[in-house]
Amino acid sequence: MAEDIIKDFSREYSRYRAMGLKALAQVPDARLHEIVGAEGNSISILVQHISGNLISRFTDFLTSDGEKPWRNRDSEFETLDNSRKDLEEMWAKGWGVLEDQLARLTDQDLLRQVVIRGEAWSVHGALARSLAHASYHVGQMVTLARLLCSSEWQWITIPKGKSQEFNVNPRDLKLSGDKAR
Image (cartoon, rainbow, N blue to C red):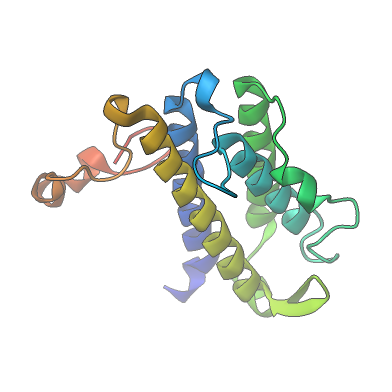
């Protein structure tokens, strides 16, 4: 239904939040800051960036530019010695700011205008842009986690060779905040 668009966005954001957290949870502490390949990012850097982006974009979402003057985006890509706890808190804070704003929105807000880096966007467009950005980086986190965990990796999406099983009983493997898919 057209009246459930914000709920659809919320549900998709929630899936990516859970997926990123499950990827992060599988990476050994000693490998959270490991960069694979030239000019790559670590899991830690990706968490810093996703969190920083969500906090900036969704603080005063409807009333101020999504690129806040206090945000230092370049610093999000610096290797810092964040502990797992620090990263989990960062992750929770960024997603919490987003979820707070989504809870305040209605489908009637979707045609309102917001600004990102001086450019006008519809709320719907800004949410689509943000969801694509978050999913892109969560996908990077999952790929890195798989590489860093190798044979210890526990699937958080449908495992290879398990599509038929999923199709028969999708609720058993559905990705949510508390069950892996």
